Structures are given as C-alpha cells and as structure tokens.
Picture 1 (cartoon, each protein chain N blue to C red):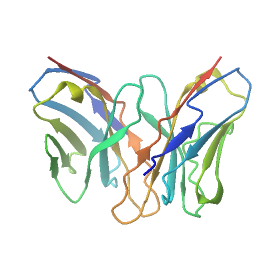
Picture 2 (picture 1 turned 60 degrees about the horizontal axis):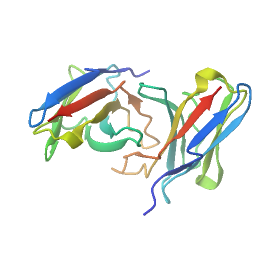
Picture 3 (picture 1 turned 180 degrees about the vertical axis):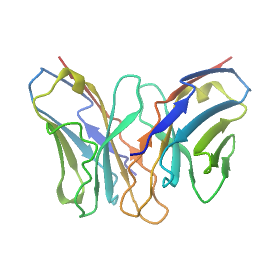
Picture 4 (picture 1 turned 180 degrees about the horizontal axis):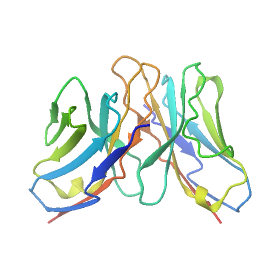
Length: 115
Length: 114
C-alpha cells in the first residue's frame, strides 16, 4: 500500500514568510508525528497526534510553530515568520499505535531552506 | 526528559567485518528502543527494535542487545556489505498506549569499504 507522503519535497522561502508543510499518513494509522532533522544531526521531536486526544506539542521550538490534523488523517505543520535557523528537513511519521504495532513509518521529508 | 547519546559518530569497516554502534539513554522508564537506517537523501527506515522485557533480539545479520541496568543498548551488524553503508540512528521512548515519542541519538555514519 501507499506509504507516508509529504509535500512539497523542497521549499525555499524568504526570511519572515510563513510556510505550510503537508503530511499524508498511511491510511488507518491513528498516530502522526512531526520531527525535524537539521544538517548532520539526529531527528528532533516536534509534535504528535494520537487519535482524538489533544496533541503533544512539547517539542515545538517556539510559538511560531503550529500543527493541525484534520479529520484524523492529513496534517499540516505551519511555521510563521520563518528564520534561517528553521532550515532543516521536516519529517512526518505515522503508526498504528495499538498493541504491538508501534513502528513509525517515515515520509520522505520536506527540505526547507530559509534565505 | 530523555537524552540519548550515540557513538561512534563515524565508523569505517572492511566488507565482511562486524560493526557495533552503542547508545545510552537517561530515562529508566524508557521501554522501547528502535534502530533506523537512513541512506543518503532517503527517509529513515526501521531495521530492528527491542522492548525492555528482552535482552537481545536478532534478525539475520542484525542484532540488538539491551542492558537495562546500565541503560545502554547496541546494534551489531555481522558480515557487513557495501549496501549496509548508511547513517544509523538509535532511539528510545516510553510506550504508554497513547503515543510513542521517540528521542533519537545523533547518528552513526557507517561506511563499508571493499
């Protein structure tokens, strides 16, 4: 079946502009995660959604970052007033998150460059 | 919060040799430890994981060991092949049934030389 997809694959923006990144999880997966991967670094947790529960926003680096998940499926990550330090690859992952099905499947990522 | 340290940051081995990557974690409540492989420009992919109720798990040439007392876990790759060349990330989390927030190590660049 189809894996996790993300769009756009690349985004170049000017400092101060807002950007929206989209994630389509695997159908039926109840959990959705956003991570950020800076050049040569590990993955940094940003936010996750689990079913109808309130999202865990504990990893968001500032109030310029927000995310939504509509209808329990597609999610958008919004970065307002982008800064150069926001440049990174933004990865989305989804999982069934039930029983022993905890594996997170990652999307291809959106490479964001803030000039 | 959880902190995961990973070493070495780079590892070069000859084809056929074994490779070992080590990680330590700080939160004794962590009970789930996956390993991801990321090839250049591609998405991370799970290669093996282990839960805290077992000490070792093996899948063909890949094995993971866990020492809960010392709070460290390791990835072992035997008979390495050129296609094993990639960045490997360890991670740790607390499975609660309500989500699985992973804390990742900083990665190990493995190069398998012919």
